[in-house]
Image (cartoon, rainbow, N blue to C red; front, side):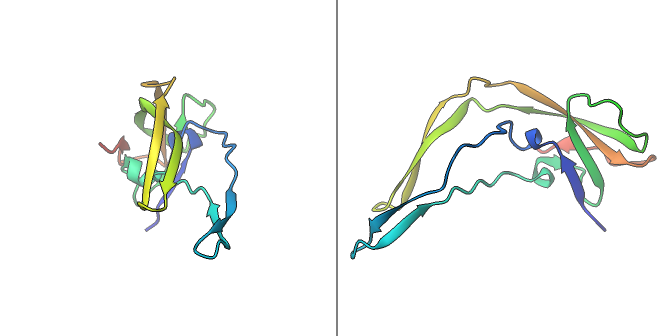
Length: 133
């Protein structure tokens, strides 16, 4: 068996530009010679966790109506994702408390719906694709 999902990047996150740079500072630790590195790592959900009906299939998920798709692709689901009401605008890590905190701002695109179509290769009985609840 195989699992393959190709999806529009906007299915995972509508933000397509990231200007964040990895940063560091010297001076931590009891001798003051430890470098602390802020290496941002973003972990988004995979298409397999976002949508049901993709396991053991070849699935293509595209936003909007792309048109001119080959006949071998059969539409098997309409998916909608809604933007969150808040966006994380800053975060901080307290070394003494070992705690991460975030600051949020209102999302100017809150509740905006993005529509996607899921396609599978072939014809016949193909499992429908739906969003996980």
